Image 1: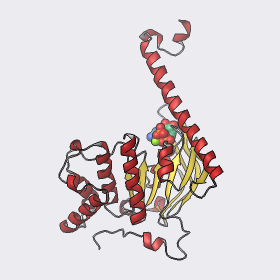
Image 2: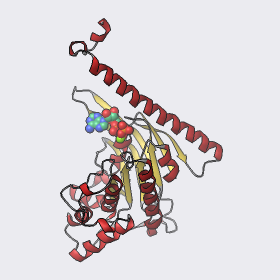
Image 3: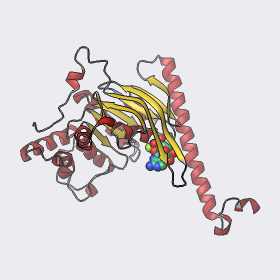
Image 4: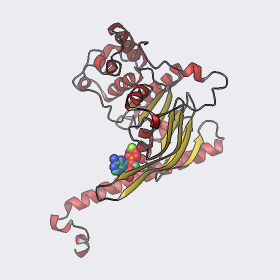
Length: 301
Ligand SMILES: Nc1ncnc2c1ncn2[C@@H]1O[C@H](COP(=O)(O)OP(=O)(O)OP(=O)(O)O)[C@@H](O)[C@H]1O
Ligand SMILES: [Mg+2]
């Protein structure tokens, strides 16, 4: 067995005849959550989606639309109730637990809140996915960790702990960790939402460089138009659990891009408005005497 059981396949994916094979194929995937009150909620409704190798694919839409659920279906963090999830041609829904664990090495993931191991150094965080499979020799792990930290420009922090890093540096560690097993796919759930705009730009630059350098396919959930503009080649708009529209950002004519921009802007504005309204309502509710906070109570004031 090699040090890295899942080889980088970007080169193979670009071979003649393979270029059109999607690296990710969702076929009529469906996810329904059982709510505590016994009701059921369809978070993802019969979504079919093809994502080409090497693409940077954005999933956008308002809060609660189902973006994160859709993303988590790609590595089976959420198991679909119906439909198929194919990554690198393998149907993940048909794999045993052991096979799924192996295959997940092919799919890295990063999150808004970084999700680093707080009591472990940067080195140990990045080495973690290489250690859990126990097949890699110490020297190989050491070399791969350094290689990945170089990719994200963070070699000098190798012995630091997460608490000693800035938000942007933490996200770089998370990217290095996700890339360590040489995945074909990198899933990103709002990776820059917790960062200021300057740091956001530098993380987006890093993701773009990584995509260009090693050909890893990036799927990114975002509600930020700047992320779409800076990074994405294709975009799917998610609304109430469905993909309602798809765009090729750069290939679209200038007119289409303007329309796309307006649509995204509208989505973002709507989200900001809703968030502001939620906050306002929460603040108003907090000022009401407790006895009046029951449903309908306020109507009698
Ligand atoms: N484990 C769960 N149990 C019940 N309902 C869930 C669960 N996870 C998600 N949902 C619901 O599914 C819907 C879609 O959630 P999801 O997190 O995918 O939305 P999102 O588009 O990522 O939103 P946001 O932009 O706020 O992150 C929401 O209505 C959410 O409440
Ligand atoms: Mg989400």
